[in-house]
Image (cartoon, rainbow, N blue to C red; front, side, top):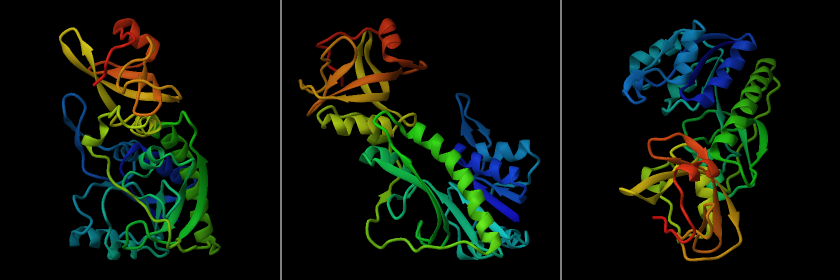
Length: 308
């Protein structure tokens, strides 16, 4: 089919690659405009933009898909379908309805649970044992369209948003190709979403990332894993020249009690409001991520130390 692909982050790259591999004609790739990235804050293309350039695909990076000129350009592509994967803009009805078969979104949750911007992080933070990826027909409502295809994924006790993201991106790419094939054959079944059980995955805010050790350990553990690798849940540890910010990237719940924020051993077991978490992987400010035992060789933290 003749397609437009609209996506921005790494999560969307796998889907675009699979569509190219499947032999679809990608008439145009849309992505968010280049943004400041890295230490130098130079303007750099998004991961989808970079992939499209590397594969000789036409790219457009409009500030708004509601611009009449952009809508006209989109309609002029004469598309069979549009595929949207974490694009980052709300699309108007004129865009959604322009392709012959319509527009389809790959979404990282089991709808109607976790509609919105951060479904993977919110599922891990909430302690959901199962999540999934779905292909739905797009409507003007936020992630409200009927579902064409579903792939479920389990969330294990040591899963992070990052590990779920990677499995979901791969599964979703295959799912999107299969769903489009069904649409092209006229065999796609569209199932309306349930009216009950709707939750919204709000964008992760910076203020959420600081760890509150007075919270129950199960909640702290889920936050650490849900915010890993980005933006990273963090705490402060006492250093020679003052508090040092440390990100916690992986943890495990342990059923022991103590004073919240205090280390219960020499191996980063931290007491919480109820229970404790053992920090398994951390990252000191300005340094790379390290397993706990490696981190402690260069930044020892002994039993009884209080973390902020």
